[in-house]
Image (cartoon, rainbow over all chains, first blue to last red; front, side, top):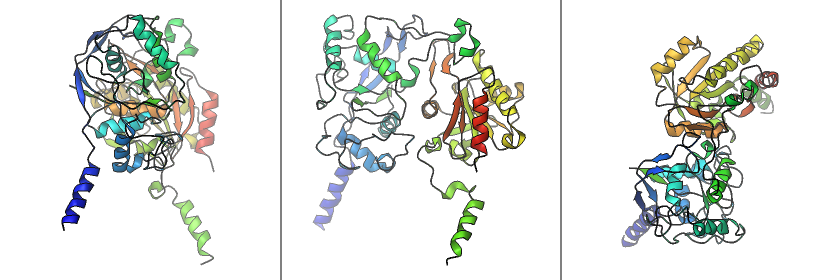
Length: 254
Length: 189
């Protein structure tokens, strides 16, 4: 009897996430994004929001796919995740030695990332939310003008992608959020909205009416190409794509 | 027993339309659970459209520039099909702008543009599902501070199982290659 109780308790502990994910409040505000809100020069307005302090890990994603079998790699619909989805794991329910529990999960599609966040009562952050949080360093809310900040990001970009990923839990930025830069690329909710091409109406060619809208998008802060590279990468993705170095974290509206 | 197999095959062919029994192909957009609400206020899962090929696009009703042309292009494309093919497809236009495009707005737009409800479905979905649908269809959109949207304009052909069979970015005039692809997909033996 006692054994059964102990087993039940053990089972319960397995079913529960080891520790609930931590979210911290970010103030938001008017923010000069590399991506002007009106496609020309307008600043972005970021409403106060909460952001997950850490990236979602292999351990956490394993608990998720155990509970939601439709997201296991041998069961997922091909249109929601490409053929490389979670292929770094040893087996559909065994991350194994190449995907340690505290390493960020990668090779996840945008659909899978969204579904995970939903399971936490959260969502993916928008690009502006992500960029807002990533502008901070350990002491400043906006470190972007500091050449050293840019250099450190560019230095990370140049690190070979074949080297093993560090575990989550890097130095917290001024908000208490970790690993915004320097660990993996991250999905954002509106990844497919960032580079909607400039408005071709202004070019006066009716054959080029591929895009519709009130403003052409141009990029601001061109010297900040460390951040622009991220936009270029996200814009090149399709929602089912997965890559070696692309993970995610979740956000909540206040 | 030996003679039963051809009979079963025949039955399967005859009742192939009752698709619920067969699993959805992995590359079908109907794998995505999207709840649509139509211009008549009807709630319908996107996957409920399985069984008939669909011409799908995304638009929004307050868009003054390209969107009317998207609807025109959809109409133009349908009209270019031979009558037998035309009778086998449905048209679906889902709004990028669920905040403004509520059911009455979709309804009055359909009436103003004389979109026959037997052929046309204008629909809205919750914002997160609009983003998912655009992802699965490979369309991009972005809301601007003034409430307008920048978005890609495409017509997409889904086969009866919800697989993307063809697409065109040609808006404002007919794309003959797209029309041909519709005929081939719809009348595939």
